[in-house]
Image (tube, rainbow, N blue to C red; front, side, top):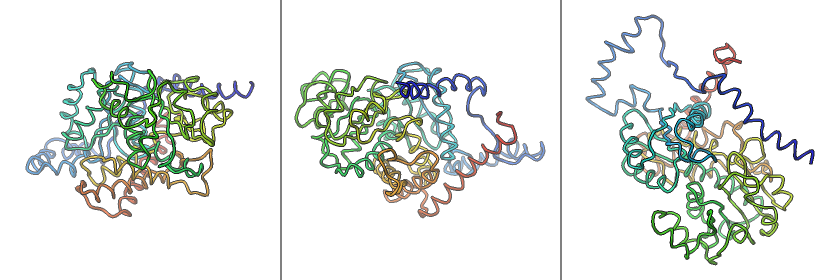
Length: 441
């Protein structure tokens, strides 16, 4: 009991520190110049009158905006605050700290300049229109924390209608990092993706996309069982036909045994569970894990608290346990994916981010941890393994070139070295500002 209390206390520490440090720094990001300013005369070059010449050049050739401005390295993090972490619909203002944190990760891990834009509307069409209107200022769009079902048509339409890459990190980012961890977990468990039974607890944006990516990677749809708050998805759930296209599609193509019931029934004899549902603990029970197949793989990734505490899952017989938290082993976290994906996408100026690019990123991420280092408590690299990000960038960039959706053709080594140099610079700037006191201790 003492040990459990110690673990619980440690799990609560980040929240306590967050409440102290956010008001101390009054936010996590700011805008700094990247050009030299030796005297006030320089403003005649960077602003009026000199800048007019640059404006004329871009007017004559709009593609020059990528050469003359920071558009090439700038993305917008767009949210309406309707599905923030595990907190739900808390609104755009309450979602802003999350978007700022995302921008910090983009810059520190991927050297991408990201701006949080929280919208005071929940209207699907207005969100789509706003993103399209923002296109001239950004090289890409990261959709974040938008509730389902509208998150699906928003992403689908924007991917088709925008001239810059748009992705939804809660869908694609979560899916690729989960797939990467799952690839290595299967290696350790000595199981093949084509033969395992997978239970997905939660049928939100993340798990819908995870299921899709798993199937594209070779998982058998008939051996996938998904649950939502009403129970398993099966062909009898006809109420989902109207307004829940993606969930109904899962009812139609998965659950070959037509299992009817709840999470307990869905977990029986399952080789793996991937849970992204309501924050726990207690959403998944120890007795359910005990009824899974031998050497079960348990991904419980609800935030801020997993569906079951890792130590409880291990006590119930779990072979591998992963969560979304950095303070437990095996963090399956989007931060391992999106910085490198956008770095590679922006560097080759890809017009979109395809599912094939996501699978390529997952394979590269999985390969970033050597097989000799693989063990049940270490299935993925951590954010400390910073070579992950230029490697993922290079893999993604090359896949975009291969798919002929990139405007810039570079070699793999060039994308890698360029990404590495930019990320090194980004981290060095932060460290130097800390050393010199520009970022308060």
